[in-house]
Amino acid sequence: MSMTLSRMGMQTHVAHQITQAKKLLAENNYNACLTDFNLPDGNGIELVQHISEKYPQIPVAVLTAYGNMDIAISALKAGAFDFVNKPIKQNHLQQLLDKALNQPQILTESNNENLLENKMLIGQSVPIQQLKTTLKKIARSQAPVFITGESGTGKEVVANLVHRLSNRNEGPFIAINCGAIPSELMESELFGHKKGSFTGATQDKQGLIQSAHGGSLFLDEIADLPLNMQVKLLRAVQEKRIRPLGSDTEIDVDFRVISASHQDLEALVQQGRFRQDLFFRIHVMDLVLPPLRDRGNDILLLAEHFIQRVSQEWRISPKYLTDKAKILLLEQYYPGNVRELRNIIERAMALSDDKSINIQHLQSTPLKQFSIQTEEITQTPEYKYEKTLNTHKLPTEGLELYLEKIEKEILLNALNLTHWNRTLAAKKLGMSFRSLRYRLKKFELDIDEE
Image (cartoon, rainbow, N blue to C red):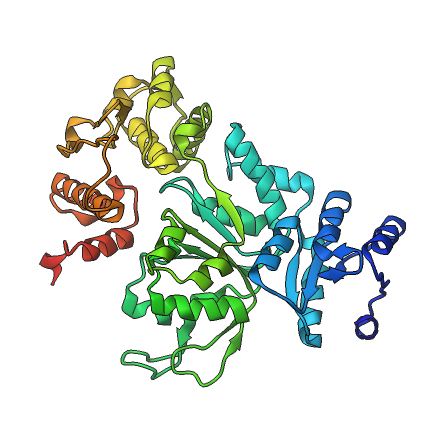
């Protein structure tokens, strides 16, 4: 390997054990490190941890002939830049080092802080500070990232931050909502197609995965992928190769996969609804986003941010929150999290005729206003579902069916309130029109469109 690298014009030092490696690291300035997993006096993960603590600017790749997902996850969580199975081909080695030596493109620490603080991830609460710290560590590696959190917590914002903090920040960030693509179009959308591969394919089309080449691919609501698509996605993530519909050849693609879901993937694996091998492949680095109700005064920071943003978009003078309005905002439950708060502020600004937003403007919002009590959730009259949530009993039909029943009732209520105006219903529910159509089809509520 040393001879191969020298032919690539790279100067190398070889260490035969961890002790010797630590000595060389202390005496020289390195641009990258390649380490075997099995070493005479320990394993490569110990060296990865040492470099991450002492020399965090040095990217480390772990090589092993005994590769498995447990070793890969351990290496990447310890701070490894990448994990590679031996034997490694020369072109793969070249690509690996090109990425590793591309560190000047990674943002400086000061730029990182600006990106995290300046309108991307707003908040000073303990959960958000912990999230920011984890983000900076995760962004340094090439490891797949899985983001989980309630709807509206900002999973796409965080995925975008992972991309922008990484050395892929000059490449594309392609976001895909897996739940919003009709199943019959999914393969073509993800992998592309050749002209004539099916009726209506009048020209070649590049898939979204290929569009992410050199950058990051964000798969939102990945739990909604059909099982046949999960098989194809697994190969794309594992081999970094795709085959468009109707093509005889495969295409090399280089992307980092970031995925997200508000569902429990482990439970879906147990139910046979999500492939275990794909779960392990994408579930390397975890990011858990806190719900808005657990973020304390971040609610007011976000509210002020939305006031400023909406003021700029509407080209009006900024308004201010009264003390009573602030107290009311802090008392809400926010089942829709940050997205819901944005909708509340936007409506309040539309209702306010002066420079202040007071308690009346906030109470006028049609969004759900929750008051948590011992055995039920009470709601505003406009969103009265005649539903009592008993926290002492488990749903007899199972959690999934119970949640689907509640979701269907919420959709019907929103549609009735808007006289079945789907665009307005989607806006009130804080979702895209395509996402609403997908759910209507799921619950067979789109019969009048047939």
